Length: 542
Image 1 (spheres, rainbow, N blue to C red):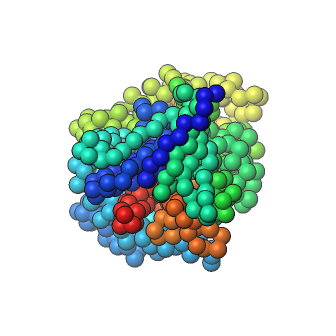
Image 2: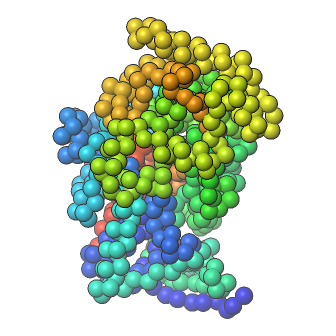
Image 3: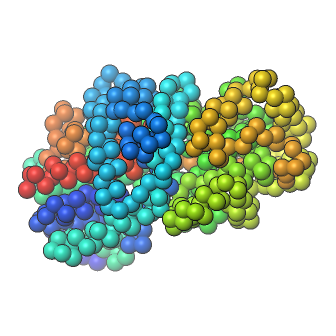
């Protein structure tokens, strides 16, 4: 290994995701003259981190799009919903403060800022996380970026490089993995790490250091160590919906140096992941948006319950129910018609029309229930099974597991009972899943992508389709505790001098601003919001 490489800067930003990029851009566009260095563990083609592949939904409050759609919203209503879902504890002082800061500021500081960048939102607001046992979003708030988060990231990177070329003093270090924070006389004075490409250790001294490294979701060991006790044991298999660089190394460093890390047991995983057909790393997963008109079954082909599983209401509950099953996989059984209308995969990769901003093509495919995504997944994913009969489907499902767990008679009973309830007509729809489908279809944003009481064994809607899914990690709701200045706090509540944390690393503010559950869409916007707040604080300290 080569000798230690030494550098110095004024402001060191650890992490080149949306939070780190936003912070650097804000500083440069405010005329910051101090030297800024972004240090990222991935290579330059992945600059932008997880956001580069994200779908791009954001939870906004009282926006022009909402008002135009007849949605009556306010920061007061949003905060009430937030508290309902968060179930904060008495000691959650800073998470509560950050929650209020979010609902009060997300529209002017994130929505309006994004529009000023020239990036648009789709005109239809989606209604997610409505709540199940705890009230959730009282009104639709989920705003989708036109172009997905990839378009936003590309816009931010372009502006960042332009600002740097116009006199900004910016250095980008890729393939540099930070291992340690360095301290002198109680103050953080820089970092130490490893240059992956040159196989050389490095150190950087800095007056100000900002952690923007994401959560722990890419580290399976850390996820299982911090698994919430109320969810029982973690599943034997969980897919990685993050990236291995989201390993929690900086969280460990903060603890070592006397800082506070809180609520790492608060996780925003998803209940329906599949193995990525073209994995970029070990255990790489894709997160499905589960179809509402399919039956969600356990490994024996029995409907999971007693409360039927259906998305759009409480993702936290879905994950709890799935992780409580005897085996780590579950099944979604449907027909081709249901899949064509309802199947979606989160992220830019599998939403090319939205990603490439082909609006008419996007609307056309939605209206016609285009089946190109279904065909693509059937041809590339082993987790997708197609059959012309229930007998054939059952056999293929059993072939995919380590044992023949499912009997055709059990499957037929489960599906036939559901179909029979549907056949009796709306006056006799005595099934909670069917009632919730009716509720979803009452909102136009959901109606267009939810079938109208579609029976599964309908011969005109075939062939049959089954999808095997596993729990997939995504976001860490807890993190490094910060005050409203984004300063990292010690156990006595005082700031750790010279150190800040933003984005997911800080639990999107305060070490856990979302509490137990997210209202969904608070992640990209939470990264931007904390980064812009940190930029204001740091620039004013110049």
